[in-house]
Amino acid sequence: MADKTTVQAVSDTASSLATQATQAATTAAATAASTLSSAAATTKQAVLDTVTAVTGDSEPVPGPDETPISPSDASHSLEKALKGRPEKKDLVDRNILKDTNVAPGLQAQQAKLERSRLENALEHKLEARPRPSELVKEGILKPEEAPPS
Image 1 (tube, helix red, strand yellow):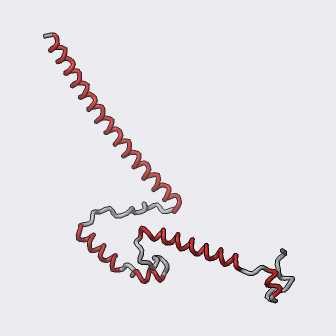
Image 2 (cartoon, rainbow, N blue to C red; image 1 turned 135 degrees about the vertical axis):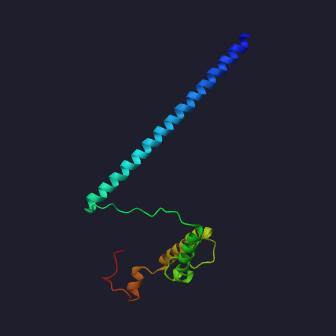
Image 3 (tube, rainbow, N blue to C red; image 1 turned 90 degrees about the vertical axis):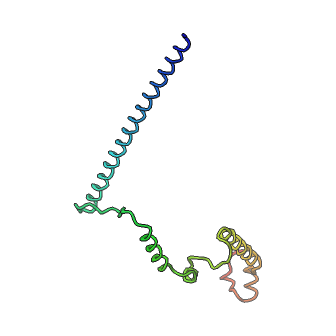
């Protein structure tokens, strides 16, 4: 009988502690939400005060329109924006897009490979160019124009 009483007492204590913990968590959450709301309002006012001080305009600056848009209006807006979108050929002509048939994931590797190929070709051409002394012998450079060897 004493064991059942002890178990009941422990169970009651645990239940009481759980209730107190829930109440404490709820209070803490409400306090945090209130603090965040207050901080947001203070920050917003500070920004408005700064804008007023900088611009000298006493009227508040209107924020973005946050009214919800219906799905059909959003669809129409998207269609309108896509109609005004430039063609791929125009973007290629203006060097915004690269004219390539390679997958986008491989375009960076393709660009690196092309650059490496150009660097190698330039290096070979620089190695094969004639020396200043040869250019003087052929009459392409005057002796006073030749860099010192």
